[in-house]
Length: 184
Length: 152
Image (cartoon, chains in turn cyan, brown):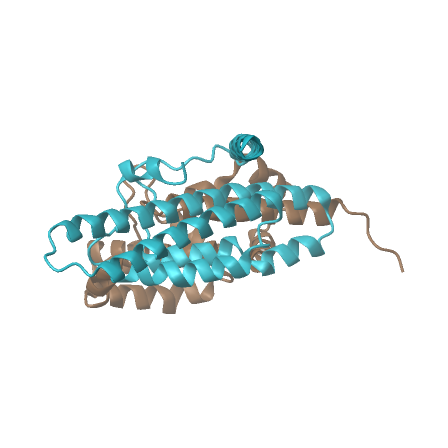
């Protein structure tokens, strides 16, 4: 029993260290990328197609290969720092959009009379899966280069874009107040 | 944005847009040159676009919308284009500007004049990707210039 408690304590300590590291790394990236901050209430003004195009550009293999071919360590460093900061914001925005869709769905479900429990459970799993993918992408980009999770990013986009498209008629953009709940 | 585009296409602004591309923008080399040109037709204080020649034919409002749409299209194309293509666009811009490449690189890296070439109310993430890619593109060109030439 005590061994189990020690194991959990170590796991919690490691998780705390990981979060602390991510926060620190993010603040460094933000300061490097010149005055990079998204004004609240303005982000997410693009539609789902444009948002997906931004995602493809951010995780681009082609850009990474091009920067590598220039054989400049300083350029390499700058590219990684710039893209990390942008990808972090893109993922936060994705997460905020997903959160807005989920909230919209919950709101609608409250008034529904015949709820399909299995369908609701599937949807909950899908949201959890997408949230997990978001975190995984953030972690991979933090510990590797920006194009490393390009395949995973494409998968995340294909799954989430179906949700974005289906809800675009009801949810145009996430409210600024929704953002603080995402990725925190 | 799609609803704006639909309204745009069914109006006089579409004809002004076609004219702008057919007579002016198609003669400008490269999308970055085109973007800078279209951005330069925008009044810094009011944010309205002006083109005297087009306004005489299509009217003030239609031309304003045509220029705004062209600006957005060019901006999105450049923002999402691969870094390699953006570097080629920068090289073409330097060639067409008539300035010495060293001077232009120094000015663009320090003043960042491209920041005013972004359309109004554009998604901030797209704007930052555009700034970031241009910053990287300028660094690529600077790195290439500072590298000693290869001898056979």
